Image (cartoon, rainbow, N blue to C red; front, top):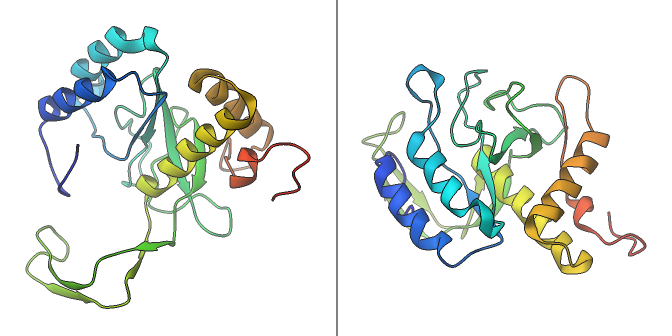
Length: 202
């Protein structure tokens, strides 16, 4: 429900998220968010989540890319799993937000994925007014927005072999991530955590 990059009104996200939550999904992966006035959180998100919390949906949300300790919502709220980003070497990415409100960190830097070919006109700073040509069908991405679906995917994968609900799988993953905590970073989620014990994947 976020078809364009850049800013969108909180009310637009709430309306779209409400339509999605009516379907009672197990997991919502949200690579979006914002700081809030006075660090009070986003009331619209909080009320919406209170309405749908009984359905058991897990919200996994990006912690933001401001290299700041300042809370970023909805990731910083208690109902969400806030995800920070790691570099390939396992250190916290320099751009990732951080702090006690970030629940876990996962690889967020240098993800390679499909991307359409053609010319792109940049609409936002720092590249606004410039053009980019893409001809390899691939692009490299970095940000907490890319760490977030990795964590969501590990939760979903755990659900498939454990039979756990989304909330149960998320709780089990958070416990495993805390056991895998790294000094100077915190709890870390890695792809192997999705693997069923004894399957030999890593």
